[in-house]
Image (cartoon, rainbow, N blue to C red; front, side):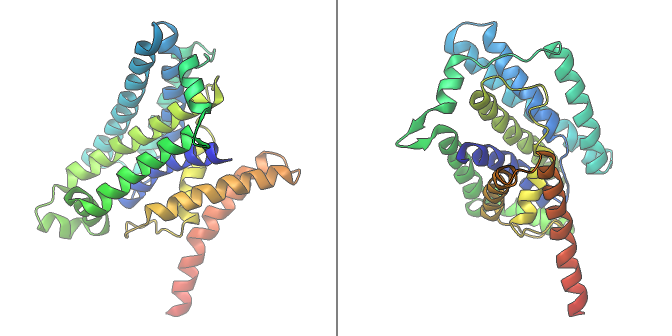
Length: 275
């Protein structure tokens, strides 16, 4: 279960950053699917580890580029995040099928071996996720960039008054989210060995549900990245529990949707009762 929780956790970090800026990124499915195709197809036409390194670089750059386009459209053209990222998701999925010609490719042996091996008994995928998480937490909690990022999400007007480049932070948030989506895709491709062309489909709902399960607000107030990762681990366990009880896999989506609805509606109801 740990590798799947780790992959979801990495993708959830990207979604967490976007939600912190009062948005949603529904292009996570397309970004993960396309990156998985890139990181498996590019090394197959190159030689050795150099081809794999180039494929990883292209995959991460592609995710950041797609996120950057999302950020520019949302910030500059004032299109709502849901519409922007949903449209980008459709474009990316279409591009995935066109590029792969409808046929998935197996990951290189080096990537598969690395993703499925363990170091000191801990899955390598889990170790990579832990490193990415530690870097993200350090930047958010210990650096000026992180404090400015939180300020922009909590109160953009006040952040502008403090001379913080709000537009730059909002745009780059989507680019960084794309990086984490692509990182998750690379780990997923190696772990699955032959990812499908829709390997990113399970992550559209689950990345949002992980934030909600962690008890984080969706209105830009300060949220806990640790809580989001705990939510990702809980959701992975819940998915396994649903399947072990004999329910169809479709029940996973129903359960995740119910979690999101309850997680959003319950705090609002409690605030209403307090008033």
